[in-house]
Length: 288
Image (cartoon, rainbow, N blue to C red; front, side, top):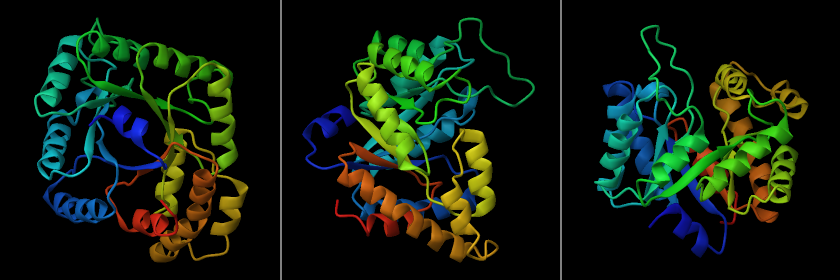
């Protein structure tokens, strides 16, 4: 079942989890434990990222294949376009189709940081190009990203909404948002998308808080604002205590997720960082 089919048939918000390929054997063992914890939560789908320039291509495929073998929820495979030969993209997507992956999440992807990377002259430079390319060659469901605060490379939010609309026009069946720490960013984004004619489901991205350093680094990379409310809350705890930070993060995000659900969000997509405990605790406070 594709994500489109899941969303078309849901009577309550869908729940999904994102993972990335483990970097070594030790991390893989921790990931296996986390996956089992996630499966116990019965998500509607799980997604696997794809490193910039295809840097995790093999690891991503192996993780997708592992998740498919568990006969659990639908598995979504990310594919990023930037810098790659379109023929390589075709090969990647075909490899996923061959193991019955029905949904591809299409992103532009970041420019690879390794100095030896050379951009292919026929690289697809935008997610909309990737959506059109895959849609013309494969019968799969396709997702795309949205940015409630605007993509960091966009001139402004309204211009970025135009890009969301273009992605839908090029075949995106659903949108997953970047995470945010103030629900008003998401509600404004959804309203603007609807006004621009974006008529596909929009899932809210949720990033649990694990450590303060990780939170700040990811927020800078992803363009998510650290709100004054969040800063004030962190100021009341010992931020050197990782357990206290994680517990604070759960208490901070659960009410926000509850509000999203109460106001009819299409789904909650958790950026798990290959961890399950915070996600389980947040979901335990929601009636979905």
